[in-house]
Each structure stands twice: as structure tokens, then as C-alpha cells.
Length: 564
Ligand code: ARG
Image (cartoon, rainbow, N blue to C red; front, side, top):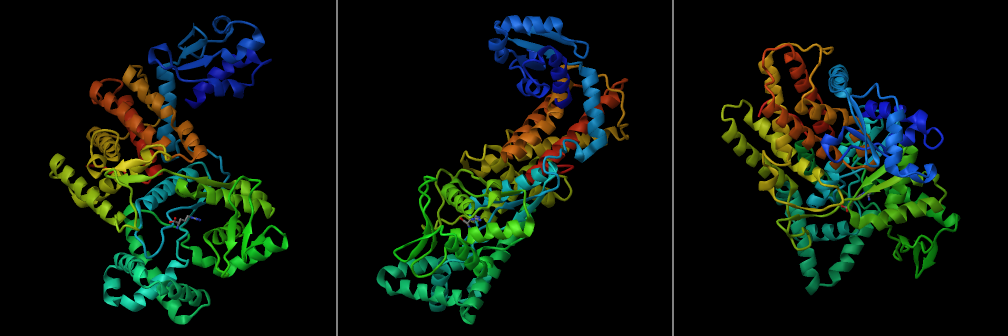
């Protein structure tokens, strides 16, 4: 309740000017645990020491002295001052604002239009896009959407894993055992098989290792044949990834992967050496990071090959030069936390003060039916298969619930894919979770389809009403069900800000669930379409809910179907 917290803080401020600023007071205001106690509460604990009085006494005194004219009720309750807001007046303000601002409701300027580059998804070519990449993709996309809402200019970067010694091994495997037709038909699966075979044959033929190294060397030296194969693997893999991105509705601003930095790494290495940041250890070049309590960052191997971090160092520099970002966010699993600490530490040693603007946004692991996923053991779960299965499950449910629905397939896509995205986003990102499709594509419970269904239901109510709604509607509702909805709606901007500052889309997902739940209680308990003088107000509230639900879903990367 942005403005109401402000009102409350302003009422207290003149009494507390020696101790707290209006902003301090604002930040201390909370929502009481029990709804009956009031809408907002101010805890007096922090004042006890300076005022040399007990918190309940302070609460009592302040309550007597403050200007209460803006509130319906003000009560001291133990150490708290609890207030109740004027429901109809507050509700009218909220509803008017939403109907006027529409999808801009909740917008706020934290980013001043500056760029936030978001390194996300970033699968490795010639490998399946794993569930880990699903997380990075959808969390990254939601962070980008939220960034936009708080007025950053998001730049989505897919830092493809398209370089490294494994491509030498793959070239050897393909040259020995590959079949062009098969690869074309089923690129990632075939290439994974070839890679697995390479490792199997390695046991009997250790000389393959050296062949792989040589092939990678040829690649790094720009050998035409090797490059052509690599390019082909990359193109085919990307085509396959694109199908998944299309399903998810995600587009990137850049697909510049690791290979893009091949000719840009030497500059970084030179600078590191010139500034005496590196040491040579057994012929390898590294940066010791003892002071930072980190393992050394290996920049160049004994054989001269560069590494993942070398490419990330030049990528960071390139992004600063190219985008002049205010923030550079890396949405990558928690297992790479040290890698990003090392990267930041090395950049700092290089004198890049903007290394402070780099944020690693980690997340936990997903298991599938209780098992961890790994390509090494050939347990490949293709994201595309998961999405397809989710769409089928969604279609089944829709057919049961609404057999006559037109464009069933399109809705099933939105709902099935949305279910997977929502499930990923609804828990705090650091918490891993088990992925069970049957659970995920449910129309009840805390799921994407539940929120979408609520949206569709509210839209159908608006269709039934059938008339335009005056954004300046006379709003007098003060019952509990409407009031809970108003409080939720009023909390949207705070939610967005918190989600943006903590890089935590789950905050928005939880919000969407709570709003949907509050709406469904309103829907079940209030006769919305009853003909009386508050009919338009009740429908206006429905409309306000549709606007905010749709926007919250959009932030998460879900579409909101009009019917389902
Ligand atoms: N390709 C890497 C992987 O699959 C993720 C890359 C993350 N981005 C980065 N700039 N390092 O593990």
C-alpha cells in the first residue's frame, strides 16, 4: 500500500522528528499478522532506548498525539500502533489508478533507462539443453522483464558454450564414426552419442585423447575443415535450441557465445601480464587470489589453450565497452559461484571499478522424479520433450473442462509451457525442486494454470457484463473480500521493486498466486453481477484484477489466455 504507508509515516513523522526520518518510519511499517488487528502496524521497539520508555507506553502516547483523520481507526496494541484504512476511499484510489495506468500500473524508475545485460540460458552446443539451462532461461527472462518494468533497458545475452577442447574430441568422433544424414535429422542426440562413444573408445584407445587435442589445436588455428565442421555443429544445435526458445516465447539480443571472444582474449592476457597480475606456474598462466580466499584463476594452460574464465573476462570487458551497462547479471547455477567470484576479483585487480556492478544470480538444482540429471551417464532429458509433454497434459485437461473451446491447441501451448515456466519460478531460486509434470500441469494448487484459469474466469465475467467501465467509477465497496483484493492490488509496486532488487522472480509468482486466491474468494462470496448501484464498482474491481494478473504473468514470461 504505497501511499497509505506514506500517509501513516507522515502522520507519525512530526512526533518523531528527533529520532527517525519519514523514510525510516516508512521502512519500519509492517502488515500485522492478524488481519483483524488492522491493515498496517508501526512497531515501537526501536524507539524504546532513546525515549527510555517501554514500547507499549510509546505506542499509547503516539496514538493519542498523532493526527488520525486519514484513517478509519488507530489503536495502540501492545508495542504496536495499528491502523485501519478507509476502505472505500483507498479502494477507489487503487481502482482508478489501475484502470487509468493499465499495464503501466506498478511501473517505477529504478534504472533510469540504463542497460542491464543479462547473461542467461547459455547452453553448450552439441549437447542437450538441460533442466539447468531451463532454469537459467526462464529466470533470466523474468529478470529481464522485471528490469524493464523498473525502467532498465534489458539486454538478453545467450553466451553459448561453443568453444573448448571438447569440440576437438567431437570432430575426431564425427570424422571416424559420424553419419551426416543422422546428424541432420537429430543433431543434438547424434552428437551426444558420438561424444559418449568417444569416451567409451578412449578406454581401449588412449591415443584418441591426443588426436582430440590436435583437432582442437587445428580449430584454434583456424583450419578450414575443422572450422567448417564446428560451424555446422553450432548451426544445427542452435536450430534445435531455437525451437525451444520459440516455444518459451523468448528472444535474445545476442547469441555471441564463447567462440566470439577467440580474437579478444589476447588483449586481456596482455593487460594482465603488463600489470603483473599474473604469475607463471609450471608453464601455466594464472592469477593467485589468496587474498580473496579463492582458488587461483587459471588463464592459460601449459599448452597455451585458454579457458572458460579467460573468455568470460574478455566478454565482461567487451560488454562494458559495447553496452556500457549499469548492471551485468549472470543467471547461472550456484555450482559456478566461485567462477564468478574469481572473475570479479580479477576484473577488480585490473582496475575495473565497474566490477561492482556484476551480479551473479545463482539458482539451485532440479531433480527429475528424484534423480539428478547428467549427460555423462547418458540420462538425457530434452527440454523440448518436457515442453511437448506438458502441452499434451494441458490439452487433456482443457478437453475435460471445456470441450468446446476454440483454438484448443494454441491455448494448450500457452498453458502447458506456462505451467513449466511458472513451476520453475514460484520457489525461491536457490531452492532446488523436483520436477514432476503431472503436478505441474494442474489447474488447482499453486500452479501457472491456476493463475491463468483465474484470469480467464475474470475475463469471462467482464464479457458477461458486456459494458464499458468508467475508469473514474464511483467505488464504495468496503466488504472484507473486496478489501483483501484492494490490499493485494495496492501491493503490486512494492512487489515489483522487491523482485527487481533481489533478482527474485518468485516474489512475483507468489504475488500472482495470492492475488488469484483473493480473487477466487471474492468470486465465490460476492454476487458480482447483481444489479445495484455498486455493480460497476464490483466489475471495475474485476477489471483491475485482470490488468494486474496479466501484467504479473507477463513479467514471468507467461501469456494470459482469454478463455480456457
Ligand atoms: N555454458 C555454460 C554452462 O552450460 C554456462 C555459461 C554461463 N555464462 C557465462 N558467461 N559463463 O555451464
